[in-house]
Image: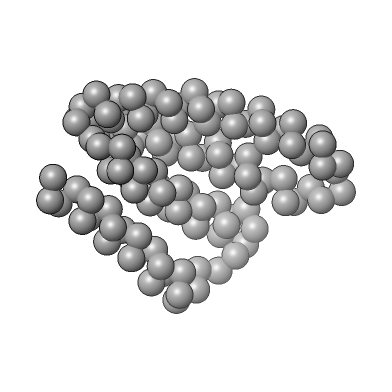
Length: 113
């Protein structure tokens, strides 16, 4: 159950962060200072979920390394969906291989605890 709560909080936090980091790329006509402020606003909400996710996971016996590996895999999963639907970017074979390798890292991080 602890991993599920951690994963759900990380999904929410990484969704905010993906929009903060990449959402502004569709608005290149806007001044940079404005998109930085907007991104910081979104990042605030990311932290409101990321910090509790890490605290919850750590308190329920996930190591910091496991939390980081899990976070990166979730971030990549969210980014692939985001890139497809927000930018219309196709999923290429080398992205699929990269994705599989990262999920392999998650497997190894959790399989031998």
